Image (cartoon, rainbow, N blue to C red):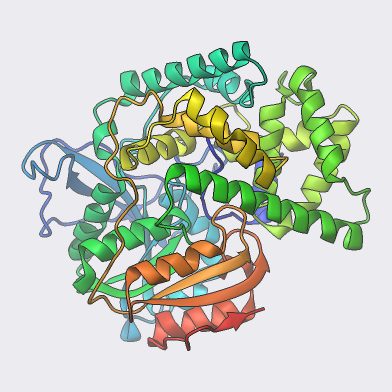
Length: 502
């Protein structure tokens, strides 16, 4: 199993859908210049590669198109790929600012599927912006990465991801190697080119084709890393940009995984405290959760569709439920049910983490996450490396430590070399970028916001703190965060340094 997503959390309503649009494709050699014309048309329903749970096309206000970009920017006149795009035009055309381009994170999340699903949160922003998003290269219908058939992915995600002895370690290493080999076999052409730097170049071409002088941007989770890399490459093109649920740009994969272990443990502790105060259900304890996971390691319980809830799927389901406070009730119910031998709720949560739909089909969410991460980072961790680090991971998180540590194997046998040790996000000369950190964020811990603001540079990174729970701040619905962000994006009002929302 891959490490937990940095994807912006979806609403509880969308998760309930999991519990019970596409556009784009490969181009031949179409125009990849800023003068190409986008052929906007109505959007179909998202494909399973974009969202394994969605079945309906977005409403009539949405339109889709394909942006053609070079596969390899070193060969601008060579082979091209299509980048799937979606937009809804500003409602107040007279006072329109431009396009507001969204990336919802992952890496590996489909913006074409996600933006319409969450657009209710952005009604005020839409008054003056065209809301625009896209499937980054390697995602969904933008040459989405495929690694294994769906049936094999079922087995891969269910298998033991926290080995306890040498035989289980060898089995894990073998599975990860098979997965990497499948990615190379099925998506080898795109793998060298899915890194964040190329995605940032795609965004600047997108900006120019859309006719915008400046890049107005709304980045969530990994989208903040993408935004930081864009700002470094094109500081003079930055317009009004929001980074929400901020990735720490100074962390290596090991440091990032350790930070996530701390973040998810902190969120779990907050959930356990809140549960005893507010829940009408019987609340779990950390010891009971650990006991349940240990039991599932050797004795999985029934799930649905003939599948069982294993330790790995339960671990992922628990992590998924910590992305939003709205999910906590399902975590309480899911743990209680699993203790009684019914793993359906935790299995559904685990499936949501892995991008699996009710019909057994997987989106490219996790495969793209791995491909982009491994294309970006140079580090390759061996079994001895991880075994040395295990005590540290276990100390910071008795529940998630092992999962996060062993997740570092995801790039060990990857067929493509990584680009950097950590990304450069320095953006001297850029306009102010609003960086929002959530103190209770499990996936992108709060400390990363201050580091991003610092690395962007003096006068560029402006930090806003939200004292809350869940991944990200704007979509939490907090009135103070919404008001502050909207004032910045709609009127250019930069908040005072050190502002805090509660």
